[in-house]
Length: 293
Image (cartoon, rainbow, N blue to C red):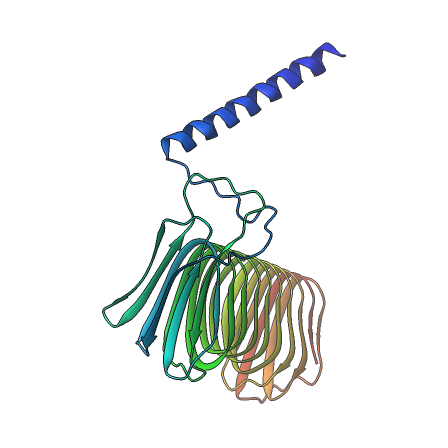
């Protein structure tokens, strides 16, 4: 074997050994929370560790590190919370200041290979109209249809999947957001796509990812750094803005709105632009094409 190659392999092996040794020292000291629960995951835990039922309370707050959160339709006039985990020792469900507070954290310093994932299941009435706040490090938030509910999600890694809610506010580092119907959506996403069916007001941004909307009915503020913005139909009653640094902007159907468009590098094609319209949509891109109608 070539001497230089041998030296490089020895250096790499030494670095790997140092890293592994350091990780195990931190694990032994308890200073490092290492959880591989999503690596070779084989489903959700069926081990119910806590369960409580309440009358309707103003808001619900859910805090978890590695777990998926499910919000589903349940009994009329009741809220039920269930926590599922194989080994968690850090969890509770309690009522405080007219609010339900939920906590479920995975067991520290345990490496999970092929483990079952923690799960938070909340069932609420169909007409629930209060707020649910979800804070998670790694995990998806999955919500059925609740036309009056307000949802706030703050997370590091995980998807948000919604049938219908009144309002969604979010801040997410990595993950996709998908919703069938919303009255209002607002938030920031670092890496991932945002796909919305029907929305009244859209005000959201993603750094790397596409924004796709089937129909927006009132106002839109959409911003991407690297990604496309695609809208099937826009019926706007307020001034709106779409910005992208590197990406195309395409609106299939837009009526009654004046389009003010600019692109540093790219083509602009706007059909039936109404200069006398009362409302304006401003579309700009640094590198990309703009096409409307």
